[in-house]
Every structure is written in C-alpha cells, then in structure tokens.
Amino acid sequence: MSEWLREATQLGCDIDEHFGDLFCFTPMRVPDGADANAAPSRDPARPLLSFVATLVEAPAKPESPNAFDPRTAKRPQIESTAPYIEISPGVAAGLTGADGAPVFVGKGDLMRREKDGATYRVLSRHVTTSDVVVLKVNRIR
Image 1 (tube, rainbow, N blue to C red):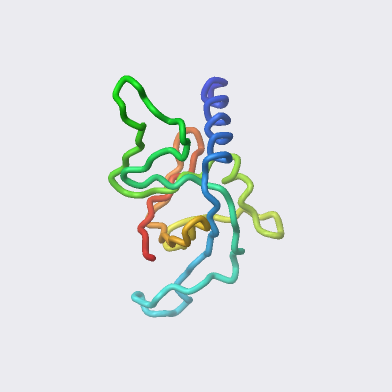
Image 2 (image 1 turned 135 degrees about the horizontal axis):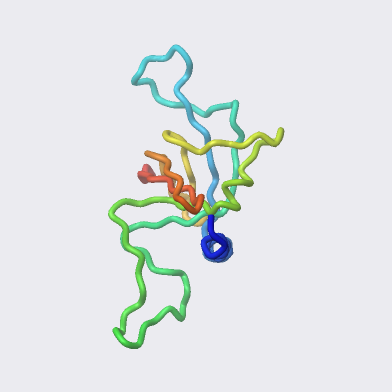
C-alpha cells in the first residue's frame, strides 16, 4: 500500500469514528447436522461485539448540518443500489474475542444499528484494496 493510500485510509477511519454509527454484531450459524433450510441461531463460539461502522443506504445524507453546496442549492448525497456497511481497517483489525483471536464477520451474521434498532443480515463480505471491509446487507427489521 502506498504512503498516500495509507494516509487516505487513515483519514477515512478518522471520519468513520466521528460520523459512523455504533453497531452490535451477533454471530449466527446453522447448527451442525441440521437441515439445509434450518434457521440459523446464535453462534456461541464467537463473541458478541459492538463497534463503529458506516451504513450506506440509497440515498443517504451526511449527518453534518452545514453540508451544503451553494452552486447547486443541494445537499450532498451518497447513493447506493443496495445497502452496505463499511468497517474501516483499524476497526476491523480490532475485532477480537476475549482470547485475542480475530473475529470474522461474514454471511448470515446479524448487525444491529444501535441508533434506531434496525437489524441487518450480512449477505456477502468483500475487502477492498485499502483493507476496508464492505458488508452487503439486507434490512430484516
């Protein structure tokens, strides 16, 4: 990773810590030997965690009261075709259990946004070239 990309990633992490939302992570899994269509349940082998991440929905406005562009008389927006949650590299590296082992957030796990109680199921996980973890999610309640 270049020095410029490292600094840009750090700036993004700092912004996420200030403007991000607190999420509660609940690990889920289908019990061993269960039917393929069995409902997932809480995975006791992985801990519950809380951390700051950024939710992007279509359309979403930054939570800055002074975000205004006088040239267009519009407030800036971030648009996405599907909701996703971004976890900055610093936060992702700190997702560890009590024993210090890294905790993997992946398909089927639940993420609850503490701000409004909205719950999302992780559909897929992708890591960008700058080590940002992108979770495609579906709102379930």
